[in-house]
Structures are given as structure tokens and as C-alpha cells.
Image 1 (cartoon, rainbow, N blue to C red):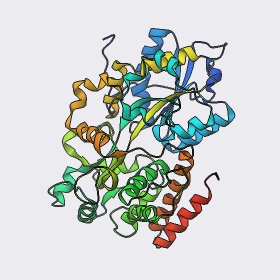
Image 2 (cartoon, helix red, strand yellow):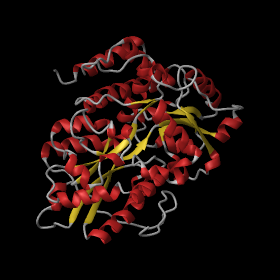
Image 3 (spheres, one colour):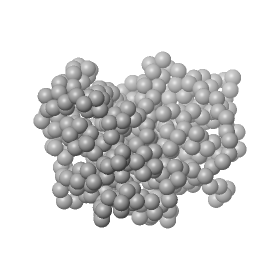
Image 4 (cartoon, one colour):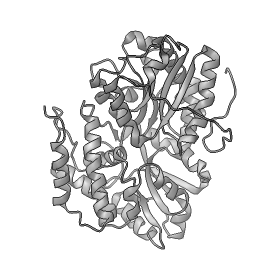
Length: 434
């Protein structure tokens, strides 16, 4: 091992200053061939935490290669729009993180570097990566638009003290049990379960899974939008009804866009959250490992599985390179560095995720019981979001429809099957015509 260092998100005390830049491609120009720009996604409890995790690794990369990496951590609420603007203007970074569900959409813009056999060989080859992770890197049959960086899945996290105080003996496994537990927890200004009602991507992840549980996919087999089927409407209504009808979600959650529900969870204000591997986020907010528990995300009945028992989307972060980078060699070196075994172990440990690199998964840290649920979910009961070029538009328009329905619920306006269907009809009309 070339060095020893700690990758922790909550206990880092180093003070860092950063200059954010959005003019990638140009940063690796002839005037500055030893500089790359990197847009990282916000994986930790805050942007500052991510900077403290990533900067030592970027410094190490510069020490090894002489190439400086200028970092900007972009909030999830802004990331997709920032990327889409960059693909249109040509003024993007050299390297960026993308949600794996966006791979096909961003691939269709033509702005990202295709990972053909030559480029994959430059980072160690395609065979280093887990097949399920590679399945969310672009349209089947085409060269990938990105390579996997972090693998994740949703699980149900519960606050042990709040469960004890409410007399709840074990975590719920079905939606009926979630609602029953939520009602016991929703007292004295506290709530049963948290949502991020203004987080468009999170909205899509949850209603997609509920759609699978209702037998709906939101797209037809030939890739056409199908947002108004009975199953899709029922899925959206079920999710919003956690606030509107069941009253187990606090109305203020309608305005939550990023990590606020996790903050409430850590502060004993919310008893449960559905989230992607946020263990380190809890630690950074002062929760000890014994303060929380994890269970598979709920299903209608029985145990998680395929089809109507699906309980998560295949979650993860991919790393892409803008095709117009002036420093392709440096960009490939950086991707190779970030997907090396050592960096995969260190970074995925820091973020509580699972490495998509096979050899890195063998590290003992990833046999922790808290990660077993994630690995088993990815292996047996998760489904990939549609790998269609219009996926990012789907996230925007349907995610916005769910956001507006949560706003209705928070304001006391009725959320009915008819109002849900009307929002989804409007969303479908906003999709590109084929």
C-alpha cells in the first residue's frame, strides 16, 4: 500500500478552501496541461464533508502524476441541470460523477467519451467491474458512457431509541407495518418516516419501486412513456399518501431537497428513512452505530424479490469524461486512479457504499452486517431504472409532479386518484415526442 490515511466523513478537522469552476474542457488546455476539473456528486452529509474526503485523494493523485485536479462538489438538486447545460454549451468539466440512472440520457447527447475497448483497457479492463454495475452505464449494445464508481441500494433505516420509546419491537418489513409503526412514532412533534419531497431524483427512485410493486414500469417495452397506467398512478398516490392520508410524514418534508430527512432522523425527530447507504452520514451527525438499525426496504407482503416484490432501484454513481477534454490522457489516468482497488476500498468505506470493482469487494470492511442488506438487495430484489435516452426527462417531469403533489398534501389540499393522474398526464405531455 502506497500510503496510510483515514477516510472518514465526520471526524475530519482539516480546513480547506476551494475555487469552484465550471469550465472543464478548457482547464485541461494547452495553457494548463497538468490540470483537470472534476465535478463530484454530493455523497456525504454535506458538500464540505465530501471535500474533506476527496481532497486528500486528489492531492495524492497530483503527487503521483503531477496533474492537479480542481474539485467542485455539486449538490444533487443541481447536478443534472448543470450537466445538461454543460453538454449543450460544451463548457463542462473534464471528469464528472453522474447518477447511474442518467447514463443513457447523457449518452444520447454525444457529449461524453465512449468507453470503448481501448479506453476500458487504459483503466484495467471491463472485467474488473461487477456485471450489475455495468448494466447501468448506458444503452445495451453500445459502448458505455461511463464507468461505475460507487454501488448502492435503498434500505429502511430506523432509529432504535425512537422505536423503543414507541414500543415497537422490530423493524417493519411490509408497507402496512411501516404505516402502523409510523403512526406510533408520529407523536409529540415527531414523525414516522422521512421523505425528500423536493428532491426530484429521490421521488423517482421511490415511485419507480412502488410502480414495480404495482406492476408498472413508467415506460412501455418499446421505450414509450406510460405514466398514467393504473399501476403508475397507484404508486405515486401511495407514496404521497404517506403524508396526505396516513399522516406519518411531517408536512415540512414537502420542501426537503437534500439530506434534511437524514438530519431529522439523526436528531430523533423522524423514526425511519428510506435511503441509499447513509451510514457515514449518520456518524457525521453524531449517531453511534448502535443508535440505528437497517432492514430491507418494505414490500407489499412476504420477502423482497423480483417483480412485485422489488424493493429498490439499482443505485450507484458512475464516472464519466467529457469528450472535448483537452487532457484525455490525464482524464483516463484519473479514472484509473479512482477505480483502483485502494481508492475503491477507501472511498466506498467512507460513503458506506459497495465497490463495483470485484477485487475491492473482498476487503473485510464490506462484510459488515450493515452492508449485507445492500449487497443482498442488489443481488436479489433491485431493478434498474429504464435505460432509455429520455430517462433524465422522466426524472424531471415525474419527479416534479410528485413534488407538486407533496406540496398539495402539505397545504391540506386533497390528493386523489384523479389529481394524481392529472399531474402524471401533464408530465407525460412534457416528454419528447417520438
